[in-house]
Structure formats: C-alpha cells, structure tokens
Image 1 (cartoon, rainbow, N blue to C red):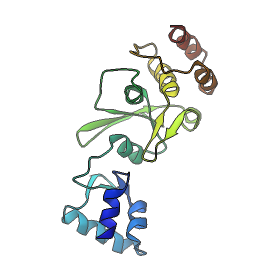
Image 2: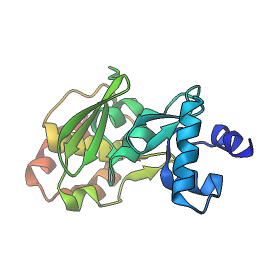
Image 3: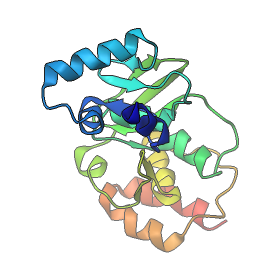
Length: 187
C-alpha cells in the first residue's frame, strides 16, 4: 500500500491524526478512524500514547514523541545539554520545557515536563526546529538549566557563543541568572 510506504519513508517516527489524514487522503473522519483501527489490528500501526501512532518496526524518536505529546514545548535542560555534548552522562528521560511541571512514563522512558514562564516558553529565540522536533540551542539549554536548577556542573562549554547568551539573557528578566551565568562564561 502506497500510504504505508510513505509512513516508512517519512522522517517522522510518530504520526498524529492530522498527518495520517493527509497521507491517507480520506475525507471522512470516521472512515480514517476505522482505517487506523484496522492497521492497529494488523500490527501495521500502534499507539505509543493516546492520539499518536507509530510503526512497530521503526525506532521512535523520543524527542519527537515528547514534542508531539505536549505542545507548545521544546527539548531543553539535560536532554538538550547531552544532545549538544555539554554534559556526558546520558539520561534516558526526555526533559521538556513546558507550561507546567509533571512526569509521564511512556514506553521505556519518562518525559519530564519542566515549567517555564509563558513569555520564556513561547519566545522562539534559540530554539531549532529540526523537522521532527524543537530543541534548544546550546546557549538556550545552558540558560534554561541555570534558570531552573541553579549552578550545576557542565562537562564541556566550548561550543557556547557568549554573544548569543548575552542576546538571550534579557528574555528571562532575572538578575540572579545574569550573575549565575558569568562565572561559566569566564572559563
């Protein structure tokens, strides 16, 4: 079936209803729901979580899944720091900047939602959109982490652009963060 091939060829590993609607070109919602149920029964699709679908033999991008489960959000904190090689200890959990704090177990990992003020969360500065997920730049992840957790140990800060940090700092409106970030930038 041509549409199943499209799913396998897609850069996405997780599909929402709207995406499946486009791929299958079915004009009736109920017909599409029935189609999805049939594909699930045949083990062509499965639901890693409510209202999201994946192919059972295609590895799921955990960052993509977390971003699609919670919107608006972006990958930040320890997940982004590890992704950018700023910390070396791997954590299976996905840390997500979101409008509230919570933890949700999905498949074999946890999504750790961390609350950021709305004006910070919705500010697009320093956020990359990869096509499958949104992730904080090294500078944004660095500042988000200091903002939320205070002073921590970073293994590698060589990729930080001090000018970009200076551009991002005003969005936090936090004098303590300015003072907290300075010693790291002088190293």
